[in-house]
Length: 168
Image (cartoon, rainbow, N blue to C red; front, side):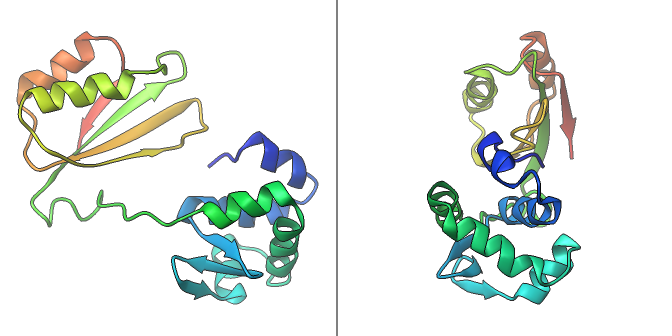
């Protein structure tokens, strides 16, 4: 996962700290009171270091870099974890499709158009998660309470707003 240009500029000379920051972003982990949290659960430096594949001593230095910088501090205090039902959807009786959108097709309204087609078919959308938000190609996982009618895939592709649709 790429990180914002602002953060990259501040930490570009510290690759181990960038690895930790990517992990924090990927999981919505926040930094407050010089500690890292997943929601209200404190995450140990050892666990973070293991997950980020860095030396344990990198964690306190990363937290210090974040806390000392007013902009980074606000960003990392604001992060929150989000439940992603993509893997559990089938067990819950829900359905998952992924929509891949390249940089050349990415513009305001792309997801809104897909959502409108789904809602016009009277299908309830349970969740939408967009991954790789700063990459050239983004993937939106759309979880619904019913399968999409077969023709809808063609209707979406006919609009030439997405690159691919996958049924999971």
